[in-house]
Image (cartoon, rainbow over all chains, first blue to last red; front, side):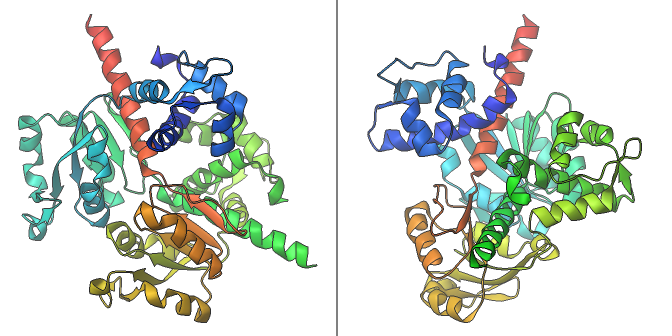
Length: 216
Length: 216
């Protein structure tokens, strides 16, 4: 069923998931689409349409069960599985990802971190020693790894992605500022941090223009 | 004029901007909406509609001038301005942002980095010494800073955002995994890295289900 859900809906699911985790932590066990739309700044009918895509659990006048809805979204996102993860590139971003505890609380289990700088090899990041990328291929033969977080300079990113795909990696989360295409059925998400900074500068600039106009 | 552009279009502009920078670097000086749609995996008529929002520069049969279109998008995004930036929080993410050269090549000029850990004060990040957050308020009185990149634990993020707004910061790029609301006309973009990881796990899971079905 989940394959019939549109990409646009999929992109909104993580936001619903985050929201539901937050209100669950606050002890709320039911939520209406109206309340969700108020809190999240989304259109209530869009929320209902989105949640209907996978059957929903809303009851007129009662709203949704927070726990059921959260579980269902986690299931659709594949977050009820367990993924073994490596980080390739032990620069600041790579080390930050390796050191982030939040992933372990979800489905993502950080196994090892690699770098091509011999000087870094053996240094501990979150208790794991940095390994040399020369040993990556052998490591991937011996260990079942699902996801690689790619944190290397953009010049080498496409080549590294191809190498990882050839070694049997199933998904690549790419932080190099260049798009790495999907290949051989490997799932890819390219992170473009700057995109959100550009939207911020748009908002900042728009606020300033508005203030200037008000001053006239 | 830019205020009439919808949020959905604004969100797509950074992607067009990135693409145009890339093909400009390759020496291409004209591009058609068809070529853009092929390269970017977007619908050509949506691209034309988006670019028409701000006048566009396309000529039937000739396409767009890469340079003009890039400049116009940069202008709309406020990237032809200069912004002074500080980083608040000198953990790995904060240090990674402070150390990233790409921002300086755009409109964003990294001025200083702050942390509340006295042990870190004075350590150099990209040539700038880490300053104590106790000195932040005085620093912001003496220096014109537009943007704060907020890289602190989520427990303190909302309070820190309010403090920064009160000190006259105009925009906050928030990396704490909690939504910091807009306040007093301060522009805010909340970065939720995990959202893209969840979409990746969706894709990975969907690929695996597809393979299992093919095996039957």
